[in-house]
Length: 394
Ligand SMILES: *Cc1c(COP(=O)(O)O)cnc(C)c1O
Image (cartoon, rainbow, N blue to C red):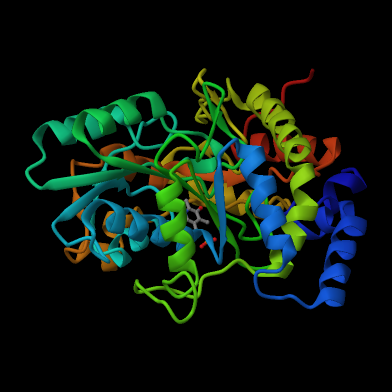
């Protein structure tokens, strides 16, 4: 046994690597904040908003306190714009996926509406446009919007979702927390619907040193409403017109994110390169499903997610762990099975069979952009070993 095999440890995520990679820029950005002391809505917030707006190609980008708040704010602003009311009503239904982080549906509930879960596409795991269409054809309730989630860095079929939204007069909010930099037919994720929401949680493709988020939109009125809601609900503190929040993006987070943004494309290419090597190694591996990517989509691989037989997943992960390879399951419990949503706060629009199956089979393996090629090879050989298949010699 070589020493290398014993000592190689490939954690799912190693944030210190990115810090070391960009330490000069980041330290400089933080030092500048320490000097100017404008912690709330400092110059870096505006600079970061403009930088993201031009990165995405949208006129309006509003920095907010988290990806979750970005969703709540976008939905609240849409309620105000479309109904003139502060919140949606419980009878307002928003079609979304149950195969996502709890924040997606939580935000819908916090905006006053009811999530309706429809099934995912079994090969890409994102919301199925057919399922949305089928649901809309028979929907008994009042559907007001669609909330697609671009899962793992891959986008939903935005052509079909937008066509359905137009045909039924619905708004679309894209949960882009996992897909900053992805695109569908050359259009950036988060810029196709009425609003796109982003998260800068440390593990995301553009991660801060704490919580942070952003809403992107092309609607001036929506942008204006979101800016009011972010800061207590008014144009200024003493002319408050809405039930607002204190949900601003911190200056220091904006400064760090501004320092990291120029490296996002490079990191994305590194992730895509690792993904290519993984998929080449795993695409014909028996019992494993490598990610399937739509030809219309540029996938940014926030996660690299395999599907393994449900009964083997626990052992597979244990063996990887023993060999020093980190893994995670996103998401083990689909939201319709989470107690909060199972209690009538959300509805199921169909049987969700593919959602159930995916929740039992998926497993994400390390795809840090700064993994070395030795580490990538180690992960590949350990995945083979964990499935008890000999690694092919190349
Ligand atoms: C991370 C994430 C969120 C929430 O973002 P926070 O910044 O952690 O609040 C929402 N939706 C999805 C799909 C996510 O992955």
